[in-house]
Length: 268
Image (cartoon, rainbow, N blue to C red; front, top):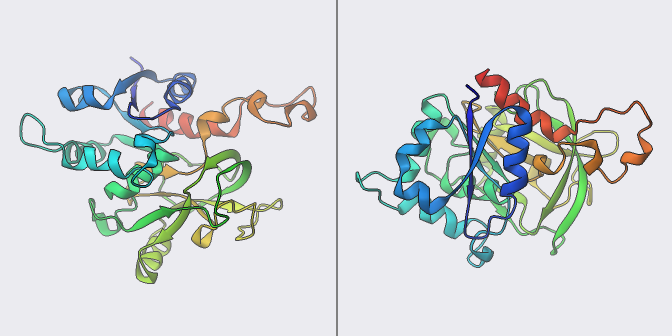
């Protein structure tokens, strides 16, 4: 049987359909599930190997991006007295995968599921602040995948080109000690790059002013991953704005599909 992917929806998530489709193209049996349904029947999570927090604007970002949604996960008490947050960390321990995209990334860092330095799950160690430019950014960016990262989703990848669309994506660590821990223990999975695919702090190649050009991080297991760019919006070359200039022999798969295929290959 195909491994199952759960794509969460509800409360302002608006990239669930295309994210679910990306999972299916990669080989998963995918299903969109409302957060409330998961809270009512958390045991269903045991049937899924990949849990995806898609992009969107949960609760309208009224309290900050991902704040209310992450609080609902962290503090909702289930029928058996456990929290959904505890079940998610158990999911990682049981060899499951968790992916957070854009708003999903913001939710995962506020939950403390990533970077979870030294396995400190539940402690928020980084944030995704408003873009340094002060306004919403919608553009395509170049990315470098860190070879030393244990991240399952970027295995074997070197360069990617994906779109970003966010108002709060500037990666900021709690302090210098946290940043050193993130860097020294290879929690960084993706960095923003210039046209020559060199890491950069220069706008707009680094669209939000992220510290050390960090675009995506993982936990120490490599099974929980969050990124600001949208891989589900780049699974086909026909989603790229310049696809007509690629020539007749162009590869039809987009760079984003490889992130979902890596997740599928992990279980295959």
